[in-house]
Image (cartoon, rainbow, N blue to C red; front, side, top):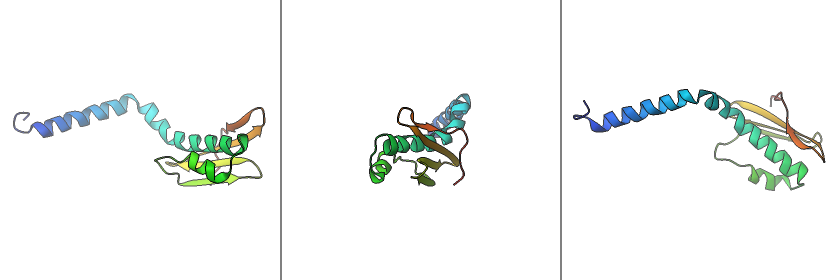
Length: 109
C-alpha cells in the first residue's frame, strides 16, 4: 500500500501521530478552554484597575486570535468575567497591594 499510495500513507501516519500526541497530552488539552477566559479576565482586570488604563486600550490589549463569546466588565465591583470556548472565568480587583486575582468559581454571564 505504501508504494501504491505514498501520500495517503504519509497522511495516515501523521494523523496517527497527532492522535497519539493529543492522547499523551490530554490533561493539557482539556485545560485549554479555561485558559482563554482566565487570561482575558485577569489581564483586562490588571490593565484596567491596577494600571488605570482606559477600557478601550485594555480591550485591545487582551484581544486574541480565538474570540471570546462573552465579556462583562463590572466597573463598580471591579470584576471582569470572560467566556471563551465554553468556559467562564472571573477576575476581581482586591486592593492596591494585591491587584487582581482569578476567582475560584466562575460567574455565569
